[in-house]
Length: 594
Image (cartoon, rainbow, N blue to C red; front, top):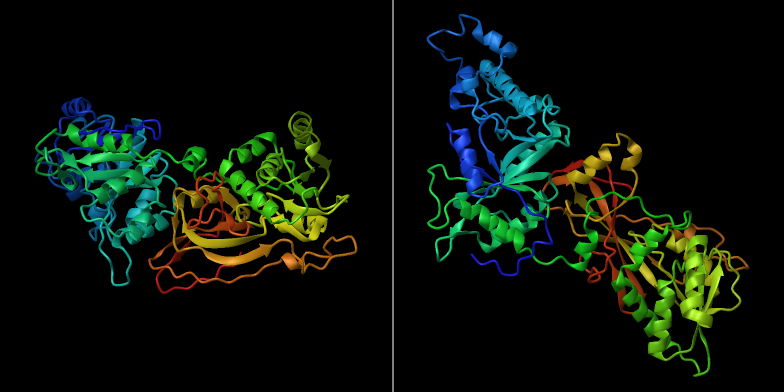
């Protein structure tokens, strides 16, 4: 098997386990074999099939357990018999239990068996357990699972990734999962073991699963094709799907065929080698992905630079985004070229909210490229950042730059500016009070002056993300559901394409101002918008994602919109508003106010 372009630094090594499907395995031999074959773990049943005698109340050693009341004692909490246990330290709950059986005794016995087996798993310190998949009638099953969540850290529900579609265009597997997790109150310890099938559903159905808590991925051996040398490989489409899943760091399980047949070459070890090969040859991380490591799906409160003084580390993160500042430099360069002035006339640039000065430096570089004489003002209200500006002026900029310690809204400028430059945009465009700040600063601008940016437009789209919803729900109050968060989405699925909701333009020549040029009120910045999303499949609406597009100058655009995202820009965080989870079935309409 080829191993060209190994890329072990991008993604951590994944764990690959083996499930033999044997009813009466020799645990020690199977475990030794798995280690020799290179597998990281085994999945084995907790008990031998003979333990089914308790499910159907069969005879044991010629003793009628009904007549001796043995069953009632067993239900009361009898321990395992040593010979009933397959292994001492791993397990899969018996798949022959039926917690939703119409037969009362089978239903009760199934509950006792599951509780007994999972209690054993918790006792020996296993961190996860695989339980049987739910049926269509799963109410009692969900009740029983709810009662055992405190026993083990994770309970994995196996789901087959089938593409069966109901008449209502709803997928069977996802609907069953959604009903089950709803009945379990979206418990954070409930996760999915997703079995991949030979016929994958459409991409829009696959994408929905990326918003769900997939902790394990089951790959049956009959899923693999044979290459020219007889080694197991996956189809191109399956490879692409597995590579996407690897980013979410699930465990992978190779499930052997029931008849024990394997591919001609490589034996059982070839399957785990192939999955590790897919992991090793993942594409190189983009600059954005490298920057996002450790921050994916991490809820952050939006910055409030007008109210708070940002820390140096925050400025440092901003300044790593060379793509953003290159676009700003390009916009300033084109704006300078469009200013028709005499060769000796000075062009005035004012950088408002200068921070530690990256836009000041870019303004000077743009002026040199445009061969224009400029005078730059750097206005900053943060006293700590202003110290850095003093150092930059003394050591780098010299007399080309005048630094001003002041709030841009209240500073009285000694002259008018040709170009007003700012980087006050939040993840939603206006959510960090960019309109309010620039309203107070636009009085510095000449009547024909240029504002960079000239406009920014906000977009929203409905999203589904169990992970983010559970993190907000963990606070157990309404306030956190009504708080917007800055998030770098990963475990999320977009239910519909983003729609535009509003735009702000600068300078705002229609703003009512007093004699000093300050806005009389802020009503001109209020916005209201109503949009309709047409969602093809049913899904859970966990939140609203917000994006923006900003026109810096003419055709130079800065964007975090998924369809127009600025290439390699390291500021891809979107904003997320989190209403309570809403199940959006097809044909249902919901109105949500933000």
